[in-house]
Image (cartoon, rainbow, N blue to C red; front, side, top):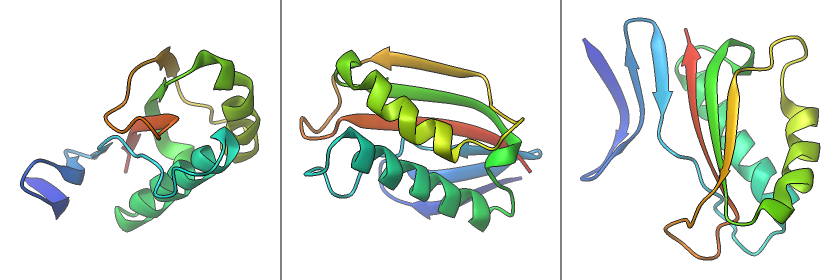
Length: 114
């Protein structure tokens, strides 16, 4: 059985199957903020979605981070380092990418265990 959350016409924000939680790409809600602010927003959204599935960031299996400008890598990492669960840093990839909204500086896709 697949359980979907916040189902829209194009995507669901989250799907749970066989003990694994898959999140859609999370993007900032306030794109006027700098990379630190946008990263905090996205990580807060990830925390909220994981909580709805009854899990948390200590159970992350994989994270993919998309930045529009690799010059923002240090600023994003500063916020990430404060957020990531100590001793539970997940496998992670960070790449430069053109995002759907040119005001977004970051998008994060995460997968976690229940």
